[in-house]
Image 1 (tube, one colour):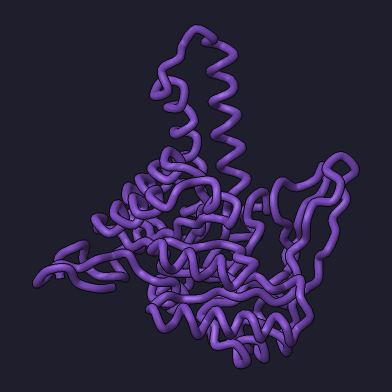
Image 2: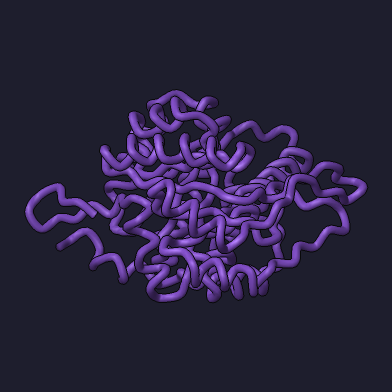
Length: 303
């Protein structure tokens, strides 16, 4: 954390700062991917209501969707909060994209080179880490490959490659990253019909024992909550959520429009969706064990 004026603390942190207490005290911080200001407002307000640390995330597609001014607003809003936050660039695929995120005020970036050969993943991740660390920005990397839905109707998953303890330990050492995303059985996006993830908890424990940085669970949406809660006790310090709360948001908005076709006020159309986002976020924060944990990061905005 940094200071604005004498005795005034800024709670917009980097990833290393927000995950340190989580790893020490055995809970996880939720990373919630937002697309626009309505979703952003909903997740941030729920974190503040629950006194829970939170990572607000933006993917490359979402980053390109909006003008840079939106992220200046995100940064200004989070800097005013007494609650601990991170603004994180999620699943960056290029060095240039990570640079643009740092320039836009993000306090953390992820370079995802999991689709690359090991040595190329290391080279590019290390390059991003050196750039970001020079600006006080943390870096998340990924080893192994989280599954993707190949066929929703037929329940087919592709590209799932479990992380190994040996490779995870080596990757952290070779890159200098601050957090590591591991593949232990989750799937990105909406789960295909009939598929129920089964997290490899013993593998996770071994990776956590062997590595020296906080671990990240991608694909948290739809994964059974009891498995996620157990993973948070077994070494996961950050859990990513995107599809689950966005689906809840859009379902509620669509239903309102269908039932009230003559209503055109955006505040009325979207208000139910905001309530759904907050409901899902509150539930997830409780599963992660982060509700009420803001106190581990200092006493509000007054130092």
